[in-house]
Length: 250
Length: 319
Image (cartoon, rainbow over all chains, first blue to last red; front, side):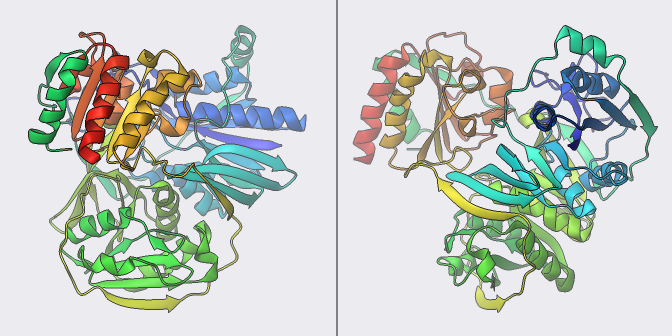
């Protein structure tokens, strides 16, 4: 099985967001960057599919700055075979431009599966996988939380409001991974050492600016200071009164 | 100029989130054409007029009995190409998140996704989107033609602004889909998704063990079908609750009218997912827990005494 996994380098979810001097971006000083958590599910799924097939290749594709080599190495340490960094200092706000660059890289190879995380936890765009699928003319299932593949037939489950959709699709396909798909492995020391020697190709790219222009990045409005209503079950009466009369939500 | 508002139906019934889509669409000041893909007539579609739709178009094909991603995307993109629409608005629901990028890609543009505010400024659509799980707000000018937007659920409270709501039904032909929804496994009756619930009661490690979530489920039931039970990452990772219930940066970002955090200390990644709730109540035994810093109302103490008492009080109100 030939599988491409498209990943992103993102600030860790514990990051306290500070706005940079330009008022339009994140101040990256002191920020810890990690492999996007949803992409971990995609990498893990690719590794399991290859292991099950007994042969194949898992390639990691990443659009990002030079420092994203480290993120790619994390995926290689988990067990992926090789990496490609599409290097740019500027990831466009316009996800279609991102998708075009990634699709151009993927186009030259015939993949059985192309996997993405269902979204990145920094920009919340939730669409690059779908856009790439359209650009490549491949079937696409998003937010996959369970997957069965038999030959070139796949069955995926995706969560919807109040239920689960069971979806049939043919391979090759683009899938985006949701939490629940699997339990990603931690890179073992052996894997980390091996990752250092795995091929990692760096290709400079210049994504277009697209038609989404960042005007400002601002902190969310502060919540007004709340109050401690009281202690223990005795405070519940007053809580209910406040919710009814002051907050008017009951 | 016209805004195309994409409505949602399931089993031939209009989904309530469609009212939010029409409400947001009419804020752009252009005429609103509401459109829905369905197998036949959609129960409740006429209501789109009440919220500001000038016209309601039902695109019918038997394939639309279940969500048909490729066929829906094709017919909506075809319509968008003909129509001269400045903006196309989707809900960022499970279906909308899947469908909007497919349509956008066919039109050669990106989606301005999951937005919480929108306006027109100098002819361009300007939107606000929470990023970093709500730890910051990104204001973006969308100059694509058309602008394709998706709206965070529960943010655009439906407002009645009656318009003509002229109904039109168009039978469409669609290509055979490669991606086919075979079935929908329904969640147990009465289960509400946290992303759509007006009231969320979330539990964390303070619940001590999975079986204790029944105290939260009882409280949720007391709200008479409006409430869902959510969970912190800690208890989802521990396998106590399903990922579908997780609120936070690696789960769902929610904006209910009332969020009750029970036994949740308030890790930054959890706060990110619920800080846009209209009213937050925290119940925790540790008076210094960070959750009290974002809560409008806090009660300090043993949740196993406080929550049943609260359930009793809510039952009285809804009884």
